[in-house]
Image (cartoon, rainbow, N blue to C red):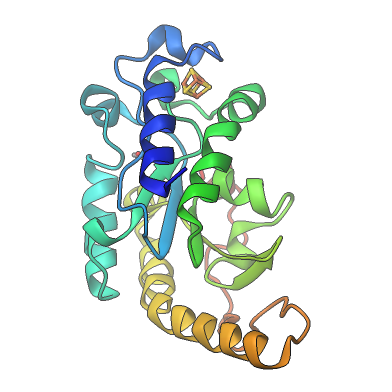
Length: 224
Ligand code: URA
Ligand code: SF4
C-alpha cells in the first residue's frame, strides 16, 4: 500500500476505534497529521482538551510552542508528521495507562512503518518509554540514538516547558540541534551505502556536555 493510503486507512480506523476505554470519553480521536513523506515524526503523549474538540494534534498552547520551536529550527509544521502515543484524550489529562498505550501502539507502529521517517522525536516521557524503556528524560534528552535501526531523539514535552520555564532553554537547544542531526543521518547513510559498515549505535558529539539543571527535581519527572 502506498504510504498516504496506509495513513488514511490508519486514520479511519482510529476515528472508529473502541479498542480501549478511552473511546468512551473522547469527543474526537486524534490520529495525527502531516505529509506521508515527512523526514521527522514527532510523537507526543495524548490529545488534550483542544485536540479532543478538533480531532487534530497539538492545537492548544503546547502546539503553539511546538510550532515556534520548529520554526526556530528552520522547520515548518506542515513538513513534519505529528501524532501521539494514545489517540484519544485521557480524561482530565491524566497519564495514559499501560493498557491504553498497548492497545493504541498498533496504530503508532503502523504510522512509523508507513512514514518511515529519518528521525523520530519523542516529546515527553511516555513516547520516550516506547523506544527507551527505563531511560530518564533529563539524562537522555537531545541525544540521538538508534533503536532497531531508527534514529530516535527524546525531548521534553512542550507542555512541560510551559509549566516549568526552566526546561525551555534545553528544549530550544534540542530543537536547534535537529537540522544538524538530519545532516549527520545523511552522512551515516552515505557511509553505510559505501562500506556496508556496522550500524552506528550512537552519536557522541550530540551528547549534551553541560549538566542539566532539571536533573534532580523529582516533581518534574512525575509530570512529564
Ligand atoms: N499534548 C500532547 O501530548 N499531544 C497533543 O496532541 C497536544 C498536547
Ligand atoms: Fe483506540 Fe487508541 Fe482511542 Fe484507545 S486511545 S480507543 S486504542 S484509538
